[in-house]
Length: 70
Image 1 (cartoon, rainbow, N blue to C red):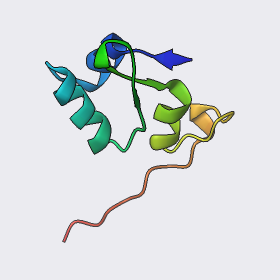
Image 2 (image 1 turned 180 degrees about the horizontal axis):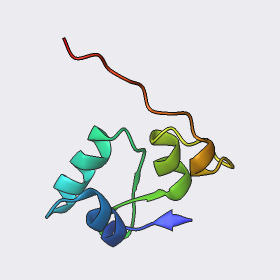
Image 3 (image 1 turned 30 degrees about the horizontal axis):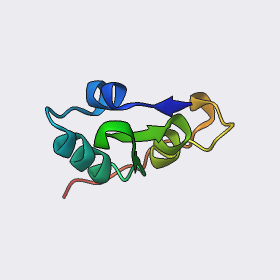
């Protein structure tokens, strides 16, 4: 499913197109520039960037890495 600019803005934040693009880059989410020069992506791209393998439920995803605070 395609995730449009308005949804990206809602979920990843940003007040401008440039800020939304920056947030996508920070989260390593691939995107394309679509209609109106606004970014669009897919649910699969978002899930993959989050470490969820396509076809795998969120419950089956590997646990996030743990970090030891020094």
